[in-house]
Image (tube, rainbow, N blue to C red):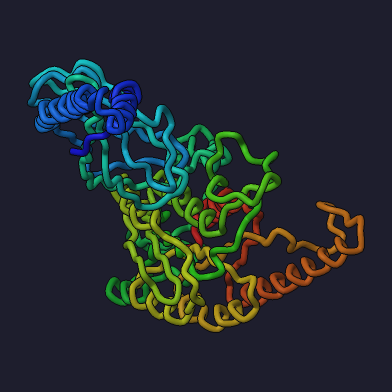
Length: 470
């Protein structure tokens, strides 16, 4: 406990102690006045202050504070931290409290909370509202309380150490609004009939050969045993494995700027950093993580198994494909702390790890950045290790200026703008050449704008499922 002078104590010191001190100094030079009245006033003041402090030291001894050890919330949404006060001592008339605010948090309401009439043997529960400004893992380290002393001369303050972990997850509200129609679909139970392309490759049964059956479907071993032609029949595959592979190496830290006018007032997707009044800034990795969680939600509704892999210079997080709400929470807990690493991606090590871990054919959605020609070359050389076994889709956020020269989106008005768009045209041409090289390996490279990344990736996944390409 730490006592702090209260306002009444300071006023008394101003009104009593300072004049008494002046009297003592003045009386020291004039023996006829005497210093006794001034010394008596000072001693009375000191005695009252000390007595009030001593009588009040035990007032906070019976107070205890309880805060949950783990809290989960979403970036940009209010987090009400539940705090329970228990008083085993004398009744506390007024109690002020506050939690030490982490750097990436702000308080939604009053910075200092207030409780009145906390009686002996009673408990009181309150909430202290925070708003987290960044995703990640944070800790609430301390809570501070303050009460006045019995005579009101002191403020008694006490610190309670906390060990509360706060997990702040990405906010998907904006992406869910853009994909509202997809989230309303529950598999194939809607009123619309969805055309299935392909016949599936899940073996169902053997039957006798019928005219028109494909020779590829004839089971020659069963034909030899039965002494008559036998044909394999297949059923549509309902459960497939989808893995999202996120690159969080140096290129994932590439900034994405959004005009303030285009960002919704309640859209916290872009509020992590600011580039002044004209733009709000996020990173490509934030977009990748949002896309991963959205795709996990869609895969769960489609009945598929979803897995997650992250890598930079090596594979660091691997979650085997499964389904269910608990598995979604596991994936969310694995990716919410990902941050860009200042290293170059090692695609060869990634492909070797995928070849070793994934034995069943799966859809691999790779969210990487191939805007660097050298990095794209390394990826092209390593891709054949898995492209023959798995179906691979590669997506990245198209750089802001990477578009054809004189495209309809923006017409240059000055010479500097022409040179700027010329550089963007060269970058767009390099990305097109990379896409053409990957197409020869059966891999499509998507280059959506940042706001279209989630929608484009989900559409690709649903098209693959509809056509039974896995």
